[in-house]
Length: 201
Image (cartoon, rainbow, N blue to C red):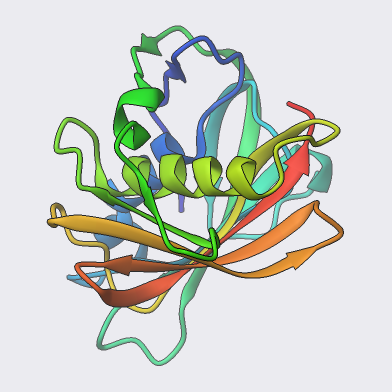
């Protein structure tokens, strides 16, 4: 299966944002797998995409064009469905506004400073809230990095809900101030983990 993703740039970025890729991939999950209730079990990135992308469920001939991978799962599936995110030569034409600072403006840290919590900002999707909070936490723990803290991988135990009351992120591993693993909690229930890396968009 091959399907083009409808993705705009976000804010003032000149690359595609992981939250938009996640939301686009989620919207076609059932079509890709052929199973109702399919969700993203894992989303991982190899690099930044600056042009339009499509996904394909067969291994591509040109690995250099692969910017990420997604793994779908549904209750009735014994094995997940894997797909590759492939960058095209087509320019991105849309741009969406994004006030990232508003999502985390009232973030509350724990005493150790290794976790942060926010009330869910319903103006944005759950994944946008998660990514914004994780980025905020990583910069709070390690503010001076050679590049930028960016979303690298997401692993989910369950499908993400469309709304919740609060979002919490707990940093559980930090390696060389360049790689972090952070557990995600929605309404105090652990739903998975998100990895951030220091990169240069």
